[in-house]
Image (cartoon, rainbow, N blue to C red; front, side):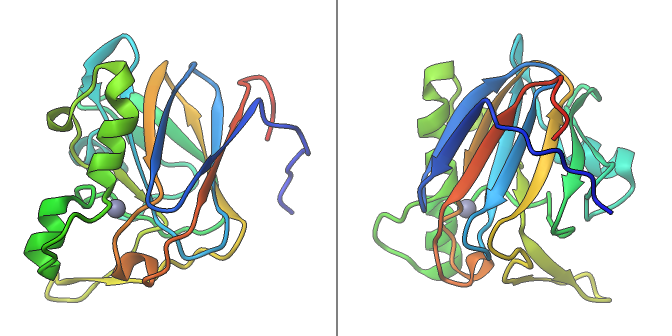
Length: 208
Ligand SMILES: [Zn+2]
């Protein structure tokens, strides 16, 4: 049986549909990322608080975990091979970590969009501006709740998320961090419904 003590978060942030947020975490603090209505992807990217050249690395994380689909017990690594987050709980079990955040260029290239479209890259940049971080410092985020299928030929197709309303993943900070998170604006990966993401922040000494 899953042991979850009922504790109050130190902070709760509602990320409105097709927007983002950013905040700092101390080592050992935990965040719970909740898919409020279900079927919604969230992109998370992070930086070492004391040295923003140290960033989340999809390449290192895939290598050290020897897997494409991360879940409870797995670790997200930096480009300097240091643990940034541990996944301490996961009610969904299907995420991805190879896609760039959706961007204006992606909507134009992949979907022929000609007008300005909300996108995760812009939302991360806007949210992280106060920390002095720009677009060129953001690479591949942890695509939380992103559900993709890979066939035998290695071809990838995007499916709607498996997450149901209220499902969450919980991460523990393994160093002091600057974190940006979005409620993704793309179409297929969110089943063409854009809904909020909640983030709850818990103190390090609290078991959640
Ligand atoms: Zn997105």
